Length: 247
Length: 247
DNA sequence: TCTATGTCAAGTATGATACAAGTAGGTCAT
DNA sequence: ATGACCTACTTGTATCATACTTGACATAGA
Image 1 (spheres, rainbow over the protein chains, first blue to last red):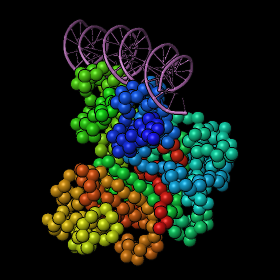
Image 2: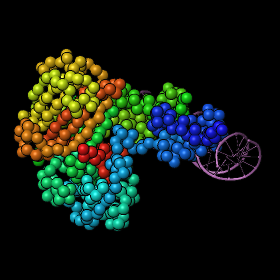
Image 3: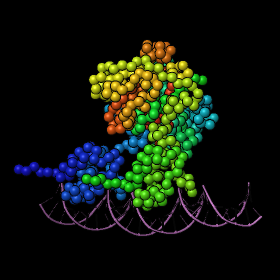
């Protein structure tokens, strides 16, 4: 007896190989349902079922009136194919948690005031864990008028960026190596003085005005930055390195 | 099969390459929308969509009645507007020196062999100083056949990239924080175990094949990385951070 | 249940055109 | 030389039209 062939599964499989082979570049658009139907000599409905199966796998996505396209994280593209730590955590089946250490309106610290010209800021201190292991301590300062509507529970549940009612633009950050303070050493369960990666970031709104200042501390033995550079700089030193003003 | 092409994306891509190739110098004006439309044989609307996409990337900007112009130095832009350390040194009137610590053909170290599949490599170890103060130790490994024509004197006098007779493409690097080894502590005149920034980089040729592997070590109290992100990531964590495999 | 065919609605890309508004450069009277 | 004015060209914005796409559904055959 001949095996019953489910055509749309066959087509889904064929498309899957072609997508994974990179035949349709990242972000590029697949042929239309009609064109695919013609190529495989099946109806549009069948092509659709195949594509919808691939969508369930997260391989492709569609927009009405536009077409089907290979699903990629567009952000990675524009940042030089950088992965976010959340994606890595999700991919490796590790459990990610956020714990709020502090949530208070405070007089603007001097270091923050250089970027945010307000007198009072909301200071949120959080600890991030992966599988229970602390891997990041983050402090975010945001102007009082922006933080007024935020609650401690919201901050614990959602990324900060999603909570703000302000369209964000670019950001600028520095990455340095420092010795772990006593408090951080305890948080990360490492000896005092261990190397930690410290990032200072200012995030701007769409108009370029700073709206968020944050400090990120990562234990050096657990974390590193990855940067893909599309072009090579005319320098042997890694791009972006600069000497710290020894002030 | 030819996949579908969204024309304005194609045009944006074409313009991006031309801008990054420096065809339109920084600050110079691009051809008018009408002229570009004629060149690509599309309507002004389509050209506009392409240009607006590039504007979203921060690559170009426009003024009404004036025209479109390259927003910033395109090479740096594509790297995230990073400055090189040489430029900073030159700007601050500091004297930069290179000192070659080692120059030898050696059996390929295991860590290097993962990227360069050759048995023998040229290993060059250098110390960089700014105003006499050591601020970087760099080790470069390059395949024997590329390093055969290099002399110790050349390496001391010129940046590595200028000496190689190979067109270079992109690079990938990691940035991490580690504790200074005994040797590095002595070089940088810091206590053993002080935090240092460590970069591992593989540089590819134009075809994407790795041709150089290098390690860069910087004392943490003297150096930091600066990254300007044109867009903000949907994550509070700095882009590119990843957890180190605790192997 | 899978497939083929058809139909309609809604969304998108593109083109053609028009007009408002800003800029650069020239002309001309003073 | 200077200021007023005009002109040509630019981007910004808004129409309308067309062709093509997905989304959703109905109907029918195997």
